[in-house]
Length: 125
Image (cartoon, rainbow, N blue to C red; front, side, top):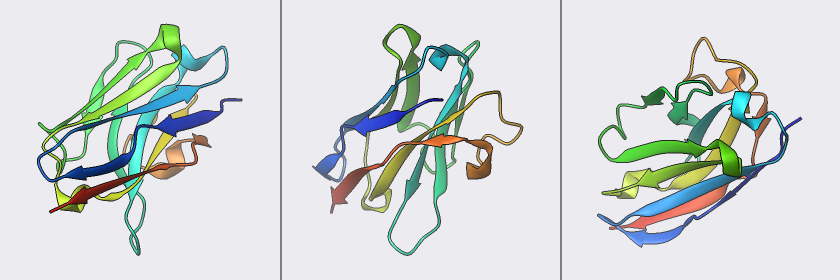
């Protein structure tokens, strides 16, 4: 069982930066694949980024490549999402997710068993 709590969301102007954090409970955090998804009003939840549990391989949606960076600190049971050069279209609720084994499809929400409550990110133009 893993519990996830996101933090770090807020209001920022276009071009600004935010760093989201996801604190996980559970002794086996280091063996979980972790990901970030976002959901804008009226839209489906979409994949943003993921990181493997073993060698830290990372995966990104095309829309955030070069702007966002996912990382993890297994000693702190925390995964991060550094978001730079933010755009108004990045506005959404951001969710942290965990999968107990390496997903076959990193970008699919159904691959992840555990979810946080979400944190709002609003980018003003």
